[in-house]
Length: 107
Image 1 (cartoon, rainbow, N blue to C red):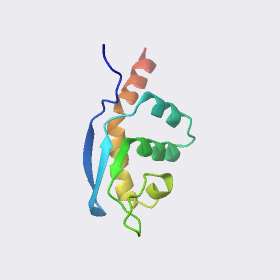
Image 2: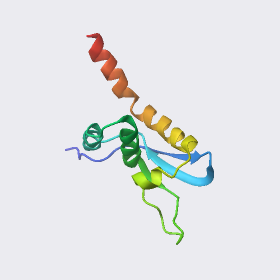
Image 3: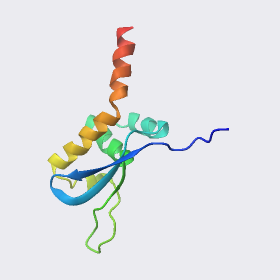
Image 4: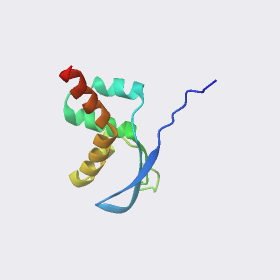
């Protein structure tokens, strides 16, 4: 019998504006996460939601040196070049969806 477990791999990234920060990101989404994202309106909201699911952890802390959660509010504080690095990685993780849409529209 095979157990159904989260078997995604992770990768560690560095952000251009924060070279001391490490971001651990999953290589894909789970089906339930994709469902939640599909309910978002607007590309920016979808992007934020995707990152909330794909980022496993990061080393940002608050003024009390406590870990910051990956939230919409905290993601919104990132400089756009760092947000773009994360979104590019998210695009790579979701590239198969674009390929699937192309295949189904060509049939």
